[in-house]
Image 1 (cartoon, one colour):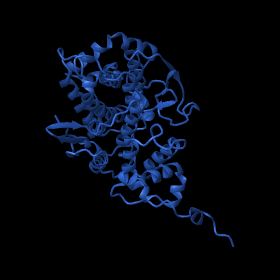
Image 2 (tube, chains in turn brown, blue):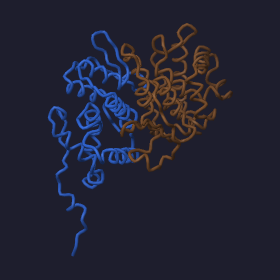
Image 3 (cartoon, helix red, strand yellow):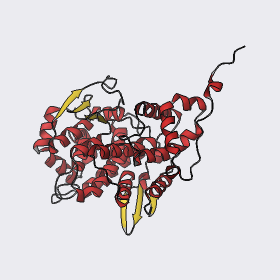
Image 4 (cartoon, chains in turn yellow, cyan):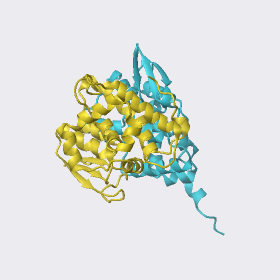
Length: 214
Length: 173
C-alpha cells in the first residue's frame, strides 16, 4: 500500500498527489501531525510510505511516482536540482517569513524569469514535448503564489509565458483532481508550511548570489 | 558547515573510478561539471551522470529513489548546515534515521553513504568524545565506512576508540 502522510496546506503534497495520478499509482492520503507515531524515522512532511520505505524528500517521492523517460533523465535531474536548491528555498524564505532578504527575493525573481524564458505558447512543457515530473513539482511550488491575486501581480507581472504555462497545466484532469482532493490556501500560508515542514535551513546571504547564470 | 562541494565530487569520481572532468561552483553555489564538451549542472545530476559512466546500475526503483533522496538531503541540508544548532539538529535526525540501519539504502553500501561520509568528515572529526557517544548510530555508521580504504581515500581516520566512560563518569572520592 502506498500512503502519503501530510499535514495541511503543504504544497509539496500536491507534487506527490499529481505525480501519483500520472504514474497511475493507487495512493492513500493521510493527514497527520509532524509528531505522529507513524513517522518514526523523521518529522519531515509530506512523506511517502512504500513497502516499508519512507521517502521524505518530496521531489524524490514525486520522481519515484512518475519517473521520466530515460532519454530525458539528465535534463529532469538538472531541473530537480534547480527546484530543490534554488526555487523552493527562495520562495519559502521570501513568502513564508516576515523577514525581508533582498538577495533571496532577487533569487526568486530570477528563478521566475528563467521559467518564463523556458516555456512559451509553443513550448508547453519544461523538458521535452510531454509532461514530466518537472512540470508537476514547479507548478505545485508556484500554485499558492499565482492563485493569490496580490502575489500574482507582484511576482508574475509581465511573465506571460509562465502564467500561460501555469494556467494550461491547471486545466489537466490530474491537476484538477489533486486540487480537489487536497486544498491549498492561496497566498503566504502554504509557504510558511513549506518552510517549517521542509526544515529549510536559515540560509546565509552568501548561499544566494544575486547573479544567476543565463 | 564548511563543506567543499568540489572536493566531495572529486572524491566520488575517484571512488567510482570515473574521470572527474572540470568541476566548478557556478552562480548560487550550484556545481557545474564539464567533461568531453558536455556540461551538467547540479549536485545530484552530476553524481547520477558519474554513476551512469561507472555503469553502476540499481535494479530496484525504490533503491534508486532512496539514493536520490539522500543525495538531495546532502546538498540541501548537510552542506548548508551552518552553526552548532543546525549541525546538532542534523546529527540528531541522522542518528534517528540510522538507528536501525547499517547503511542508508537497503543492506549494502551505496553512493549515498559515500557522499554523506565525505560531507560529514569535518563535523565528525570535530565532535567531542561525548558527542560521538551521543550520536552513537552516526558514529557507528561513520566508523564502519571509514574502515574501507577505497571510500576513505586520503581522509584522516576519525578516532572512535577512546574509552568514553573515563571522560563521562564523575570522579568518585
